[in-house]
Image (cartoon, rainbow, N blue to C red; front, top):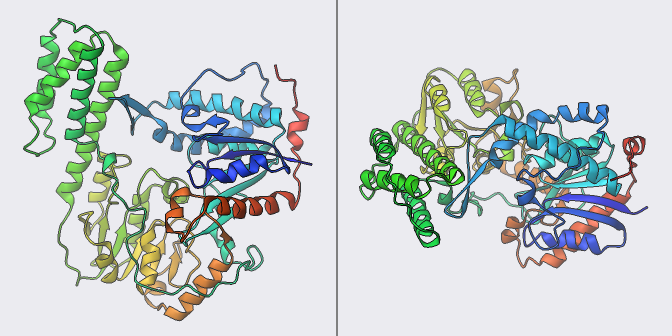
Length: 520
């Protein structure tokens, strides 16, 4: 029996050959690919946009609808990242949107996913990463309803190694499998890993494009007006009342202190935009969305700057807690009950002595998403906490800390490499290593403080862990850290693994047979 498969992801230049190899392999029947590169069957970027392209005449079984209701919560959490606006021919992610818009998408995807599975008799679904981008969440839940074999591919930080999972627990995956001889026996003996001081991760490049500050907003504003002047006859109206109103709003809004920005110039350009696009409500909505994004980013930056300290006393007893980037699967999914990251900070405050400080640092690439006024109000209410400038050396803060607390971030991995213990709150690949503590209600501070990290024991544990991993790259950006990486060789490695996984046992789609129908 051939495998009919849906693949969600693997869309990078260096991972797309994996799916293309699947499409050519005779053991596969249909391979339906959600991607953005040549050969993709469904363009993921377009699929995220609402379209009335589903067959609502399909009678979705009540059992299916009831089952998919459980996906609604995770789906809604994932949706704000899908809320976008186009301004100056660029797409910007907004941190705000209507829940009702997301419900429209949920209903649409429930139909589309059901039809894809039934029509193509799908018996394998492969998802790149932990389901967290909306469509992949519904694919996973539908797979469980139809009893379809599911393969979740997760890239490890170790070069040329990945993990796989078949289930999620809550919204996370169970990394403890990779510390079990029964669940993940050693496949590739490995002894070469050596503990060394951590360096800046390769993926921590310049993400300043995410920061929608006043300069960028003004540049977009000017460019859009220029396009309009070139494309159509200029309107000769002047909206003096609107001009005055907007000028007053922007004058009272104390945003950037950059002397290069002229507030009068900004208000004049906004008023001119309203004049040029008078009656074009789609354009005005785009402007309003971009303006609100700029305001929210500026408010975030102002709040962060006003609370942040550029210097801190490293001789005091403190716990270092670096915040995770949001939105991301590490918080939304792997964070579990601590997806609300400040809950984890509050738990640290309860765990340590009152006179110990918590040195908190926001992620260097964080923008306004997930950092609203309530976030900062909650933060200020936690006693004896210091917000450190986000560009302060993380390694210095790790080195001088009592221990590192993290939701599930790279600083925990870095901490144990520097001889410091790590307290994690979510799920993460290094959670079973010596010196790592996973938070629970019975954890005592003494449990952490009385533990020492033996370098050789840690090395052996990591080498054993690496031996349980699969060889290959399933997240394209990680090809950068693989020596002499070749995408075709990688495609063969990963395809061989998928074939082993797929044909160990065939899973029939029992529910699909019960609810089969003639597609119109």
